[in-house]
Image (tube, rainbow, N blue to C red; front, top):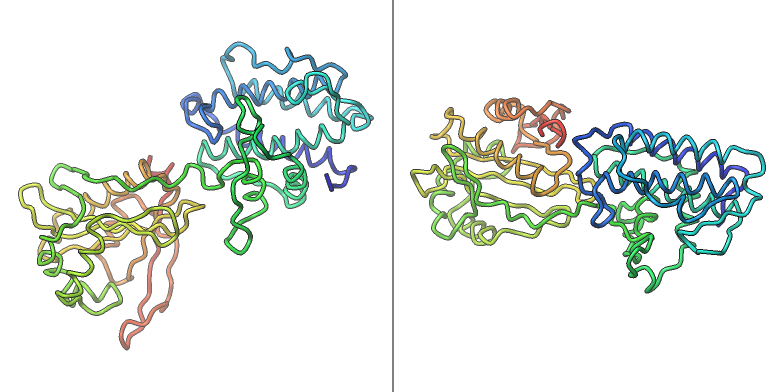
Length: 387
């Protein structure tokens, strides 16, 4: 483990406090949420983390029987119990000479003892990862300093991989491929991959969100019979002017319908899903809603819509976009949903505002519309804001 021993306790305390910062956000309603730890709810994870702190605190004081590491009977306040146990381990690790002691860690071996510095390194790694686990479960950010991540990465690289990681009760799953910094990977991503966790948990799911129904609309995939109905609006100059491209020909519309009629993958940046919007009383599409996976790791999803002008002013776009936005958050696991639109597109601005999205940016003359410069607004909302 290549880290500065003199800084080890300070960095471990930083990891524990990061975990306390996210656990402080836990409410009773959150306790049954899933976590990156397979089969564990957030309640289970907090019980495990609390027991770990109690076990490490006992080991630092020369104890450490297996009983100290077992989760206690269900706590009436799991988050409060965790906060108290975290304070206990910080106090135990602050005692003079703790790094020179031998720690009995029965979670790792029933009899072997470990040098104090190595044991604290294990604890540091656990609480970088468990702080991330809780944050992901709550869908909130967690912050770690670069020196803490460097230290945790050094420990993670030293954790043996192999068949033992597939055994029941193993602390970590087998390693998974790490994308690397050239693919927007980070030191935290590397730590998670080395310990068998996916940095993109929860994984983007297959986009089988159709059919969706509202009071007036049915939203599903386009079919080969929809070419003329799509071309009726995609071929209009007044529609194309806000899409920064010429109106589509019927031949091009037929190619597009053929390409989107089976859905599409939903795993990598750039994957998109185009859904037809139909009135319940009529089979012909009156418009479409588009979802694009802008960033799989950060779960950033772009939404857009195109409707036939003859159906404008009736609330169809807001109704359809609201249903698809709910599916993007609830089924596809989006963290942030955003829309980019021409600043002259008053109808789409109204849709964004009715959906509860906020205006985040005004991009001035950021695109060339034929011979004229155009500007864009960016509207967005987070999953927790539109829950």
